[in-house]
Amino acid sequence: MSLLARKIRLIMKLRKAGITDTAVLGAIERVPREAFIPPMFHDQAYEDIALPIDCGQTISQPLVVASMTQALKVNDRHKVLEIGTGSGYQAAILSKLCRRVYSIERHRPLLQTAERRLTDLRVRNITCKAADGMKGWIEQAPFDRVIVTAAAATEPPEALLEQLSVGGILIIPMGRDKANQFIYRITRQEEGYACEQLMPVRFVPLLPDIARNPTAQQEQADPYSFAADSFAFQN
Image (cartoon, rainbow, N blue to C red; front, side, top):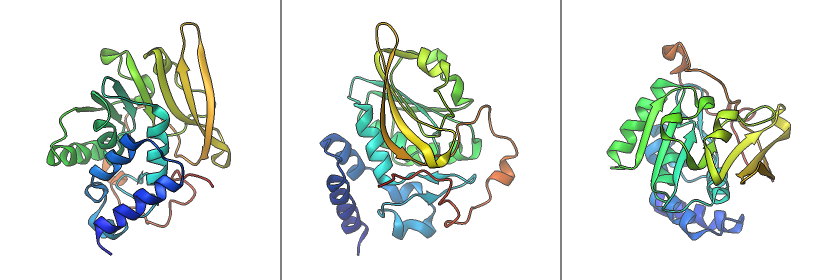
């Protein structure tokens, strides 16, 4: 089966799973997922599974990417902050839907690779940096939307809440136990925040600071070792 046929099959699966936002589906259709994964996994690019990338991380399951993006309710006027650039795939999806993406990654090797990919794809509305994502990006705040691709323990970082504009939305997984993590949608109101629990997932933990020892972190992980750590939609 060709990559195009597999992509069409994936889009149909996402529709059946409840992804009804045509803009989100269109973005997933337009962004080549195979460009964000190692060549050895290209034949699995449009399977609905997480796949390993460098630094012991994964590219997210397409259904999780689509679900989080749909929950974000993003439009072409929005400025979006992403915590966890990873492969660059989620940022590329967001770039098709919003005015500008600011993305933070704590693993420098991942960031460098992601930036090269985005440049090769001629994506011009994403700005990235290596930093502690838990501190946000105060120089560019406030943000209309914030999306976090790692799990906070019990509450979102205060800096991310403070950098969210009134009426803005934060999408973040939370939960101490990987077996009891959920995606939450937090909306900033004139006074306080409204919080909705959306769906169960499994994420790697949200960590502070820039990661050290990049050489060791670049070792390729076993593609089948991520079942407990990579995040995935739970049926």
